[in-house]
Image 1: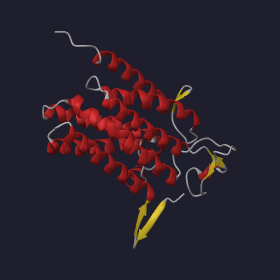
Image 2: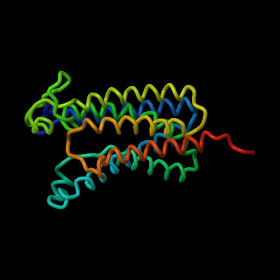
Image 3: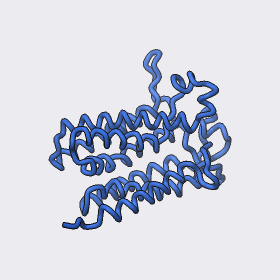
Image 4: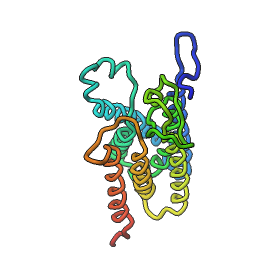
Length: 251
């Protein structure tokens, strides 16, 4: 594990931050290529995409503060200014909300735009999970099996001692598979919104399953983690949306 990539004077360059930046850039460049292929106004699309990314970061940060509300009440300044933390689902919600508002403002097709952006989400998320691995967060349960990895003691995963399931690497692998599956679906796309709904269903199923192997502290609703509850909502939303949008329009 390598949480710090290198130092430049007093500045520390963290591996997690570099990989998140790489994920954002990979998603942005791929989305711009898709927008050009779909013959959209690339300048307008770039502006909408930029603000959607800002909305995603704000949403991810806000949801993190909500999840860590007790800690936030104890140390609000440290949580706001010192401690970095994001929750992926908050990013999805924030990004989609901004995207919807901007497509309404500029009177462009929301579903056409969201399909392109949804295609890039697992690609960017893939880099983010690699960043989680190098930092040692979002780790799995303790294990003595061959798949286990022992993290440095200074990392979040290392503090529990012993080997843990590398859920970050497992997630990164399946996120890349979801990206390629969405590419496959895009080539056979039958209706607008299909890519977004496919992403909801595919990621929702994977996230629900991988949560059983996570070992880091997370909120729970009954027997399910908060992430599993949201994953179930994603799956249900994807299925309902699919049944409605795939239905041939009546004339």
